[in-house]
Image (cartoon, rainbow, N blue to C red; front, top):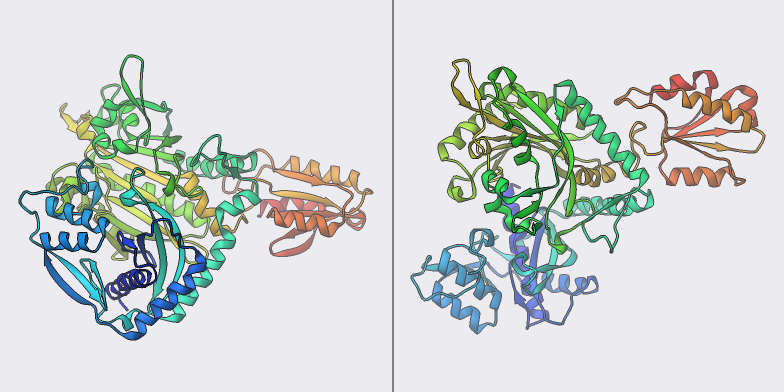
Length: 605
């Protein structure tokens, strides 16, 4: 089954969900019901009535009755004023608001509308003459489609969860109940997905983050502001060091920038006009407006622009690991996946147009090496602009076409035609090569990205002096390997289920004593561990180990060390001491290692 057919099935199920809810709760008022990854949702206002998972069986039963009855999906076209009257007569204020926007502006997309005019009625000329509705049985809904022909054609589904969601994403609007479902063409595909979801619950990074003592959240500090423990900080440091050491191989130089910036910088970069509502802002005593930095690129441009540059200096490559801040809405925060404070392993390359290919390929090499170390399978997406919505982008159509052609040529050189088109997925300042990683249980996540930026060099007037002594406009490349370290950790913790590789594990080794007759032998083992310098894949000076010499059973010590997901357990008893051996326990099993071979063994992990 192709994606268009599956999309129609999932969209039809969103309508069937609303149909069932309306039959069970006739007072229901409906928002929107789009298709999302693997399924659909519908935003519903039931006043004081709250839907819980206990209601799912009742709703699903009503949905199956609707499906089995076999109503056709029928498209109805209605003049815009008649449609607004329909919404009023049927007590559907959210549909009325959407219809008002369609009449006034021809769109319901909130980001493309004046925030002060959302939902306002107009007596002026209509931007659209008519709108489409879809009818199944007695249920009628404002909708562009598409749908399947009949309710019997929707495949297999299951309601998964319900969550709060502010209408149109504004905290000042009513909070609706967002009812989520998943849907697939066959029951077998649905069962496989549900099995994956069960496994994902066991791997939930929020759960494992607490169990493994990696990070915490505090109500006093605030939502979306994670606090990393010593163990979590070691993990972050190891991952970041790995990235930066690879960057240093390619001549990246570390820079440091402040955490607040005048709004002028974001006006010049174009971020202010696009994202000012997402910024934390403050006004100084002298009346200057500053913002907590939501990204680092404008600051790096100013380091480049601090003095005149010759073409002989290029490319210049800056790297920095630093925290950024965005005023995300509380309802959209989720563990480490979406935060108000997040740390980027950010880098920017300032180069000539002729150097773009070489620099992009160097970044691509780092990405391949990093994600290859962790066993991620990567898919490439070429994210381009949507020519039908040029208002969302900076620069001309001609500039965009030239930049996209250049990026596409690089992608074809690397992967041929094995890439995904991402029309409309570009950054506002330029096209991207996005890398989609598949994790251990088959889920996909956007991870690294390489972004070509021809707009900020224009906005900041970034140039170099070329061979002829003339001023030449340069290009800027954004390169994120992990991107947000916190978001990467949310993916990586779940990918590994908390079993980190030996070099990255916060606690690499735990020595477990069987009795108190081996303490002198343990001292010999510790001396060996203290003398080891590991080299793969990053350098650090000493192993991270602990000693469990409590007067507890060996079984209890092993269980606790395993629950902490410590990759190596060294079990030491009198027999080991007598034989000059160590019992080494890993995920692969247990084996005896001679004491004089312990260094070699650990260096091979």
